[in-house]
Amino acid sequence: MSAVMINAKNVTRNFSISRGMFRGKQILRAVSGVDLTVKKGEVLALVGESGCGKTTLAKIILGLLPQTTGSVDLCGQSIMDLPRLELARTIQPIFQDPYSSLNPRKTIGSIIGLPMRVQGVENSATIRRKVQKTMDLVGLAARHYNAYPNQLSGGQRQRVAIARALVNRPQIVVCDEPTSALDVSVQSQILNLLSDLRKELNLTYIIISHNLAVVEHIATRVAVMYLGRLVEEAKTSILFNNPHHPYTRALLESVLTPEPDLGIPNTQLGASYPNPIDPPSGCAFHPRCAQVMPHCAMTPPLSNNVNGRFVECHIYNDDSAENAD
Amino acid sequence: MPITDEVKLDDGSKLGSLTKKIRGHQGMIIGSVIVFAVIAIALLAPLLAPHDPYEQDLMKRLLPPFWDSRGSWEHIFGTDHLGRDYLSRLIYGARISLLIGIGAALISGLIGTIMGVMAGYFGGRVDMVVTFLITVRLSMPVVLVALAVVAIVGGSLQVVITVLGLLLWDRFAVVMRSSTLQIRSMDYVAAAQAVGCSVSRVLMTEVMPNVVNNLIVITTIEIAHAIILEAALSFLGLGVQPPLPSWGLMVSEGKDMMLFEPWLITIPGVALFLLVLAINLMGDGVRDITAPENRN
Ligand SMILES: Nc1ncnc2c1ncn2[C@@H]1O[C@H](COP(=O)(O)OP(=O)(O)O)[C@@H](O)[C@H]1O
Ligand SMILES: [Mg+2]
Image 1 (cartoon, each protein chain N blue to C red):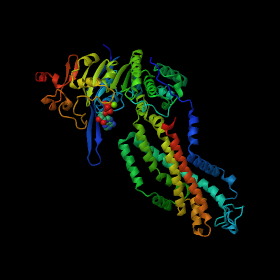
Image 2: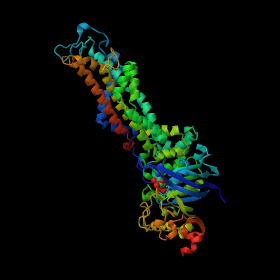
Image 3: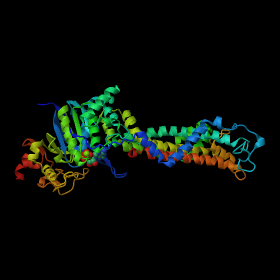
Image 4: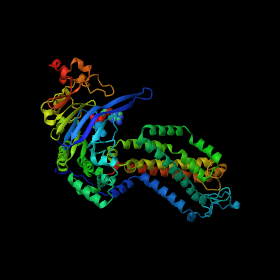
């Protein structure tokens, strides 16, 4: 039994949305009561459509955004109590868009060296040596050391972002759609690199994606998110072989469409993605659900442990099981 | 390990491409030449001025410049109503104009940048307060307030610089706020926070370098703005006080004799116009060539 690296309990994040001067504020619940546990060496994939709260949850886990309620522990310590530098040594992000994640005014060497300087390493020869070692590790040629980000391709930039995240050897890496801004030809290179690095450096990953196909090979566990909630969570093989939640099934079908990379999976989900400011009553998925039942619109479903997975759906709630079939 | 995807590193050095860009920007070249010429003139005034700018010679009042049939080469731009050499006053006046422009822009730039960057970075309450202060400031007419303050406190170089500095920060604050807001949403700011940078480090190494080109542009605009306002205040008799040779004061002193000795106004007027134009041209150029998108 390996150590628990991330333990999030009942994490909720609200944004207050201003709707103009006289219409007051509204609450948008981007993440709603999420429980999540990630153990050492695991690769947890967080999947769901755009806007379901994946990035918000990631930023909370990274300590970049305070949660409204709930708690997040990293390696058994609450992120609220972790000093800034220790938090940075524990967990690092890799962002979606390598055109926005690298400061255009800095050289590659100084971008990758920043985490070391922040941690108090002052000897520039030490920094340079380690930066070059890390560049080599992520497959960046040494001659890029003095280049600026705009001299690199998207894939090379993402390697720089990976190098910056890894230069201090963190234990956890959170990758927020690490390939969705890249050319298709480069995507698999980056995914393979991430996968190799995990084995080499014994890392724990959270990988966010809106595309289940991307994560099938790399993830050990998959959590499916819908409108701020985790609706199904299981080991990758279990989830892919036998998806239970109607939303997971729809997502998996969308993967089989000819162009799975075109953003939001769009299949027989019928009605469009709901407005998170004004979520549907009961089960938030009921307006689009193929197996909707009358009480789905009334009561929110509870999370159940069914066939080796957690699933949050009335079909699998004990009391409604008979009604379902 | 996968092979690195294709490489497109350009071989041109950073400095080389910058020079190329500057060379392609004629307005910037013209502007910079004029600005640096004025700076040189101001610095070297004691060496360049043919006469003492304060020395009066009532026997030689209102001599016309050399291009007039009555003009002489001894006083190339003629003399003013007290018989002082106009060229020497113009040369020393460059010092006053630049001093006021740069001094006021430094003060207002400091105030406006701090307010704007704070508002843009922290948002929320800080932003509300700053936005309110900007609104208050914008609702005050600059010239009238400056006139009133100078009338009460009394005009002097220091007072004019301070008053203009305390009045001209609004554009700095507005522009720095919006550019900081934009940079703040960039993932490299989040990445810097995630690697453990302190707030001040994020501001100094991630935010400031990416808003500094806007800052330079606004600084040039405000230098020009302050120079013009000083001229206006001096013209109204409430700027720097005689006998200091400010260009605005020269126009003011010449206005009574405008009809018969028009050069008294045209010479300092043209000098003002050229300097302000040149500063603005330079600012435009800096904005164009420092945009990081064009760095290749
Ligand atoms: N800073 C913010 N202010 C207001 N709303 C936000 C903010 N960040 C995210 N949201 C909203 O929260 C929801 C979830 O966003 P996000 O976490 O980015 O989703 P995802 O990463 O899954 O696409 C969206 O509806 C988004 O509009
Ligand atoms: Mg996202």
